[in-house]
Length: 323
Image (cartoon, rainbow, N blue to C red):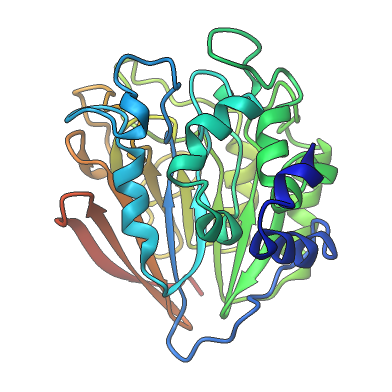
């Protein structure tokens, strides 16, 4: 199934062959860039093709906007595109990806740049046009070696001077707890890489403004590991909003010296939602724009911009890497 998928274009086949040689190890950019590298991220992306708002991939004025967020990615300066989980609704079977995701973020040039993580909808076994089931077959069939199925979806790579770590937060299927294979791998990966700047990303954020106010603990072991290693940025999605937090410690306390800045990037196109309340530590929260988070990765610092599909720059700023 994977071979058939990637035989459709030489470009993707080349990218997969390159990544496949590396397993879950570090991926170095194939093309050296004169300027500092720029990456883009968003999750919660493509509607079910059976949705009344799908409209042949064109969406409506308010829903199913994946085609338009993908248009923001057409610039040729991106070093990587980070699909942040729930890439395909309502459940991520291969034929559903082909009918919907392929029309936007799955376009061949973007697919070759993709460094994805899975969301809960990729593991759903019912409720949509076609479902990938508990093995997330549609997700791994779509991204192939780019998604590192041999490690069950977690891996790391370098871009410029930065070390990036992709984790699978679907803990029912790939355990996340302290002492699990994934958490032990994370600790070993952090120990093996001495990069000054570190970014980690997964689908289900630890911190996000919720109506319940509860803070889930399943990814707390990762936050503890990353905080101890002086990581700089964590990205999540799942909530259909854009949200930026102050620099936080693993308990959610503001720590301007050693904290990690978290972004919630669930504005990829499917729909808007989320609580009206804003939790402590949240600096900005937007429930009205679809778009992408753009990050420029300098040697010891970074710039961020939340770019709306309407051309607006909703949020932006700069930060230094933790030392």
